[in-house]
Image 1 (cartoon, rainbow, N blue to C red):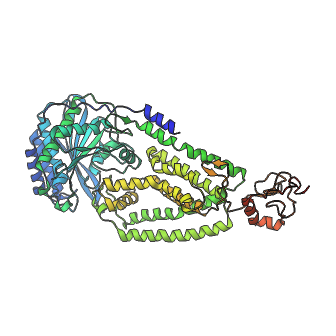
Image 2: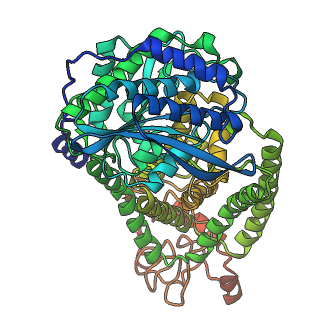
Image 3: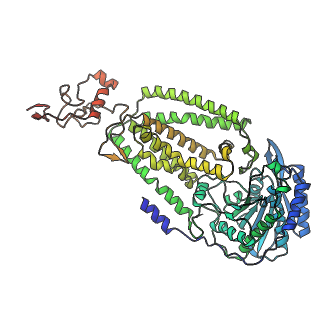
Amino acid sequence: MAAFVAVVALFTLQSPETPPLVRESVAFDGARAMDDVRTIATEFPRRVAGSEQDGRLTLWLVAQLEEIGLEASIESFPARRGGRAVGLQNVYAFDEGKARGTIALVANRDIVRSATQGANDNATGVAALLELARVFALTSHRHRLLFLWTDGDAEGGLGAADFVARHEVDDLVAVIGVRAVAPNGATALRVEGWSDSPRLAPPWLWLLSAPAARTTGAPLVELPGPLTQVLRLAAPLGGGLQAPFVAAGVPAVSLTAVAPEVPPPADTLETVSGQTLARVGGSVQAMVMTIDGAKLPPDRSGGTIFLTRQRTLPGRSLALLLVALFVPLLTVTLDLYAQCRRARLAPRPAWVRAALAAVPWLVAVTLAYLANVVGVLPEGPGGVLVPCAEVVAEPRYLRIALLAAVFALVTVYVAGVERRVGRRLPADSRSLVLAAHVSLLLIAAGIALLNVYSLLLVLPAALLWPLARPGGWGRSVLPVLLGLSFVVLAAVHCAVHSGLEANAWWYLFVQFETRAMPVPVALLGVFFLSTTVFYARAMHAAPRRPPSPAVAGGMGLDDLGASAPEPRTPETGGAGAAPGEGAGTAPGEGAGTAPGEGAGTALRSPERAETGVVVDVVRVTAQGTPVPRRGDDPRRGRSA
């Protein structure tokens, strides 16, 4: 399997085909753009989406575009903000070209509620886009250019999503978003090409940003590594101006300057650098000129990731690798199923216990969705929730604590029910393991249908669960819990790279309860967690037997002790014995052997056999059949 994975990865690597950067000088006027930033920040403060100031800024933008010579269009759309309906507006203008295809430049003009001037986020983006419109109105270009100022994107991608829904986007060659691009003390330029679907911007567009930034002296570009890209495909919760375009398959990225964090109320003109604004604006102009003059590769947004600046891995190959790594788990499960069939183990008790383990988690999901409907938990903006949204910065600790308390009470109650069911329906350890493995395969199949890249999150479980064995915590529970390692890694990655840190749990929870995370995905995640807990408990509680030479998937056949008797029939003298043989006796010995002459062959009354009281038979069999003394005839069970 490892050789297959290596061969596929080696022979499917490709080149990103990044277009060469044009050598023409840029004409972006940083001083004029900085004047626009001052005007926007001082004359239109508190321009929250749908507010009066937001509407006044819209009219000002239209007037500026008319001065440039571009015809502005205003599109209104409804949205809900703070529990009430508001009207939002997108403003856009086209600068026509002769070649087919459109290059779009996007910036959001609204700010979060707690901000005052919103100078860097996002007066700088609005002003940079306006200056680029002035530059390209006086510069020849082949493709048609679109300048789009969206509304409702400060907390969620409402404006960009509405534009994508209203317009035909197949004609878009590339989209570049600008947001918060001129802070003081900028150390890097972050490029984002994520979306809330399993798609990323194509590698050529990512890699074009770095040489463009170098030509103007802009901060160095931060490009994501392969692990970050794969995690973003596996857990697609990305927001931003580019997100709706990437989800629609359009090549799109957004640029943001990285600097020491400034709280929204302190985001004033004193925090803005005119020099950084000029350099980043010039970099965007260089990218647009390169895209406009180059013959672009046909790659659209998808699952392709770049390993280096010269090598990419296609999304189809990545998906094939992830599916192939589940083959060992499938093989182990089929072998374990054959064992259970030969031992005639009833599967029903194991599945009843597995279903009971999922009940508390399903109750928690239902309560979270109900709390969202009645307004106990916050509503989402209706678009892609961004990490900087104010709802993310306001965790509802008390309400989450009450939800956790209800979950704990339901868990305790279900555990009591499971104990009562266990006494009535005892299950063999092997059938419990089989139920866990089959559940994991079904969960993986459901995940593959929704997002094949999300198989990465359950891949450690597929590789480590077959290695779990009865015994101490390190042998039984630890391999099972390590199956959650990539889920934890994805959460930690979200916390670190989004700047959320301790509030990352709340961001992920809000994505879940507002159903920004699709309901089928949430249910599959819940079943994965419940199956993990069920499997860990089953392995830790299973009695241990001496190891056997026969091994199935890394687990000795005798490693799992029987927590319930194997079926007994009139034709068999013991559990799993051949017809006519007593449990644990040598071939040829019948069930009528005197007590003590054959391991586990004591005669039993029909009443004891019906009640399944065979604890002494299981114990003696686990200890092994006594070695015959010299002179004994093993075929007759007595001395010769």
